[in-house]
Image 1 (tube, rainbow, N blue to C red):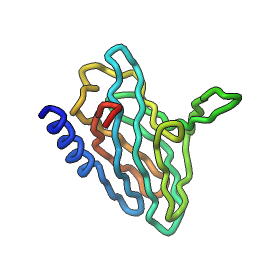
Image 2 (image 1 turned 135 degrees about the vertical axis):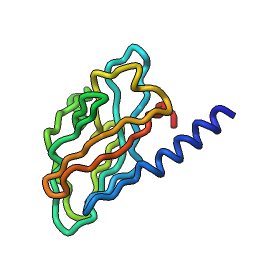
Image 3 (image 1 turned 90 degrees about the horizontal axis):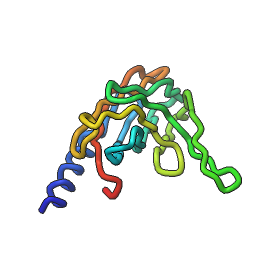
Image 4 (image 1 turned 45 degrees about the horizontal axis):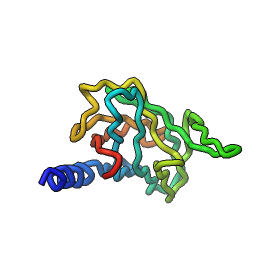
Length: 143
């Protein structure tokens, strides 16, 4: 029953995590619940530019953690995370944040704020669309 309750909560949170602001839409955002001893975790989701012009994501922030956009690259068999200070999202395209690709890296986590079933607020700042605020659920890695 507990798995059903947490799955339902996750589904409802995912529905409310869909956000639209001008020409930018976000969907399926989630932050992975990290082990209690961890001081960083990853965030995933989709940012879609439904507009007619490219827009640049210039900053991501949160009161709950330091947030950076990273891209995972494999060099000589080793995964390396590359910090992306900004990224252009072309008109009609999307930036997919997923494991072993682009993703959010959240660091400086507080055990009080990062609990399963809780949400954190992310602020996405775009050159043209401006600030977009989204509430993102914290979920176990297996959901």
